[in-house]
Length: 435
Image 1: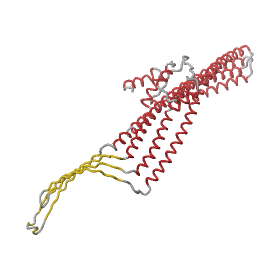
Image 2: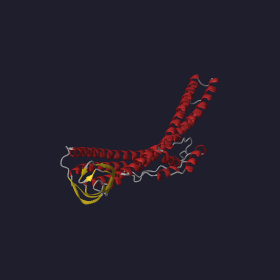
Image 3: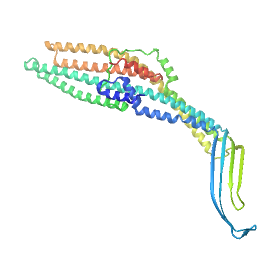
Image 4: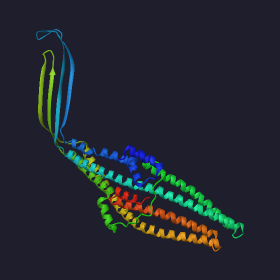
């Protein structure tokens, strides 16, 4: 938890220095509404166990009464002349009940324990999702910032090319069409810059929703980033791990078990119920015959057995069976999705490594091609259009390379989330690769 002073320091630092990935994550833990909802939901659902346990503990109730009475008699009754009597009747009753056999109570207790366990898993899943959502939003901002920077560099390069084309046209070395091509490329690049600026602001908006801060500067990804292959290097081992530890799948299993227990709970309504019942009553009564005090203490067994309730229990049991079947089918769906998501994440990491390496080579090639095109233009062997095309290809290569690096990092987080092992340590490692 961040203290108020720390939160203030982070807020002020928004204008002083760039946010790191860990800065953003710590703010997200404090400010993200989804995680606050998840924590509140867990706290609410965690009460299911003590509520269910209360049923098997002694139940005590106390009731008391007091009544002011005014009695008036006329004539003579039993030799006593008519009288007026005012008195107070009062007393109390203490009831204590202890369940001896309530099969449904013990089913509810097991059901409640499973509900609390599921709530804990769901909270852990929310924290894991917070990691991926925060990283995704963070890298989206960096990607859009890179895109804007590349666009601005492209504009500067095209502007230089446009000026050269104009000068060459003025001395009759090139046709007006080359100038028009350069001008068109420049105008399109300016329009793309406006679009890139807008996309950057939108990505910052998305991050602000999570951290409740405007993060105008973020630490960029450095060249220290390492491309690490998944270990073990076998997708089937990752799938087997996911089938045992994926949090969504574990939560679904608890949901299925709770639904099966609901069938037993409804069936238990057919069973007899046995309680120990103890009662103590103390009364103080007045009247014409004088005050009378009495005490009555009783203890015994109370057996109740449902015979017929209009078919309610039968149909509730039937409903519970269908809902259990529904939960079983949903669990199978989650299991299949877990397999698919794990396989996809693994393959995305593997292909992401190859893609980053390939795009790094492509970037080197396009930059070399652009330099060659510009040199050729200077000596008249290449046209202005050739240079513009080379500049465009260089921009695209830079953008794709930048995006591929972020995608690789996100895919590594997604893979660990799929197998239920994603933790803050994974963010710490990535944070070490930022400038």
